[in-house]
Length: 231
Image (cartoon, rainbow, N blue to C red; front, top):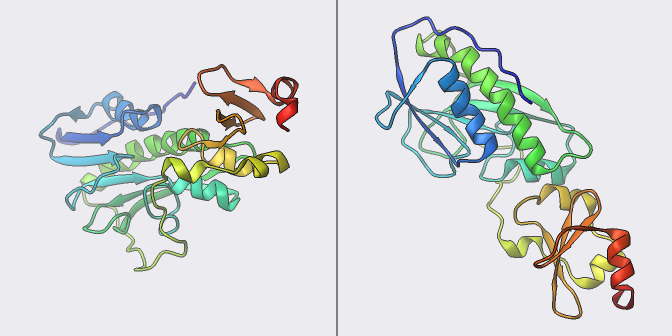
C-alpha cells in the first residue's frame, strides 16, 4: 500500500487536464492531484501528463521516470534495468517542442532494486513523482521555481518503443540460459519469449517462471519435468 502525504493547496483554484495511459502507475499521479484538491477537467488551465506517450503542446508539465537528461524517450525504465544502473528517479519537466528535453522543474532519485521488473520500478518512480508533484505544484504555479535547462544532448541513447520481436530469443539461447536482467526489464511488455521445437510459444517470466501459450505459469522444475525431451 502506498500512503500519501499531501500539502495543502493555498492558492486560487486552478483546473488541470491530466493525461496518462490508465495504468496503475500513471493513475497514482491522477489520484494524488484529486486528493490534493485540484479540479481535473477536459478544459484545464494546465496540462499534466504521466506516461501518456504522445507529443503534447509546449507549456504543460510531464513526469518522466528517469533522471533527465539521461534516458529520454518512451521506454526509459526497461533501458535503465538493462543497463544495470542502481539509481533511477523521476523528473518533472515543463514540456517543449522536443520530447523529454524541456527545462527541469524538480527531480527525485529512486533506487533500483536487484529484483526489479520494469513494472516494479515504474510503480515506485511514479509514486515518488506523485509526492513530488503535489509538493512543488503550488510553488510552481506562483512562479517561484527556477527552471533548470537541460543540455541539448542526452548522455544515453534515445529509448525507443519496443516491438514484440524485441523480446524473442532463439531456442538454443534459452537452453543455455536467458539473461535474467532482460527478463525483468522487458516485463510486462514485450516480454521475453521463444519458440519451442514443437512450435509452441514459451514466455519467460520473472522469478524463474515460465508460461506456455494458453497455460498458467509454472516453475523451471515443472517445465523441465514436462519437456525433458526438448532440452
